[in-house]
Length: 394
Image (cartoon, rainbow, N blue to C red):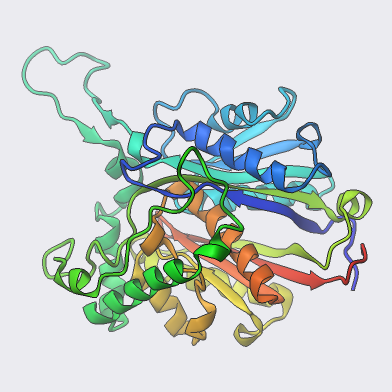
């Protein structure tokens, strides 16, 4: 089985630990988190990709207010990449980090680039509040303060509904109970706790922070949590925490890999990717639109996928998609997900792709799919193949 010159190879992947909202990473500028992930990824390739060989950078970021010009470029230069490298910041809400990965893959598939750095970064702890009336002057009386977190990420701009209110609509339509969501969330926490040693494969400690600031599984506590909105079923326990963090993947062409990479037992290849969208209120079901596209591109069935990462934007999102495709629960979010470790919006699309690569390597699976919804009714997904190559370069 061969790798073609324009195949997109995952050379390496890395992420920071995820910090709780106003937690251990709150004082790190967003681009510092991004730089740390880039440096961590480059450190893992053991010299066969040097900073000077990175030809382009795409970094996802949702909350760019007050970060300064060109956040992706800031992260790249702080990571030690040369000033000559072009950099682009990508905003596709929660799918930003995954869309950045797709754009990098496209540049390799078209033959424009050989080595591309992709990823995502977010510091939700540092998102500012807005004083929108100050530009023209507030001559008298009180001024309204707008929360940037809500304004630019947590509220559907078309309906005015909070993201959890949007998700509640799908919960009702798919007959998912509060108790089922609670149990799913507890299992997500248990999986993170159980697989800490495997998660370290993808984490580069930052400062004294070596692990995700995860939510400990507590059945008694989660059952007592009140719904976020009256008469709802989604609680803070079945919704991911706001978080800080960054992730990075270094992609290279098949030609570059065959020429420069050391011999190894296996290689990860990004085989397919796509986007989809529908009505913005139904974010919970938008991944159901993109997953069939990925499978069709590779002529695969659901049962042929060995590992799934379907983002826990809410517990119900992953549950609905599992139910609609009849996916084996043991194959989904094997090492836990966003409900337990947090959801830094700009980072998560790349984070779940990173974790998918990790799971495929650990479990020695062949095919894996990562997918997630994003605000506005969109979804993005990628399909990765792990090839066994038996100590020979293809």
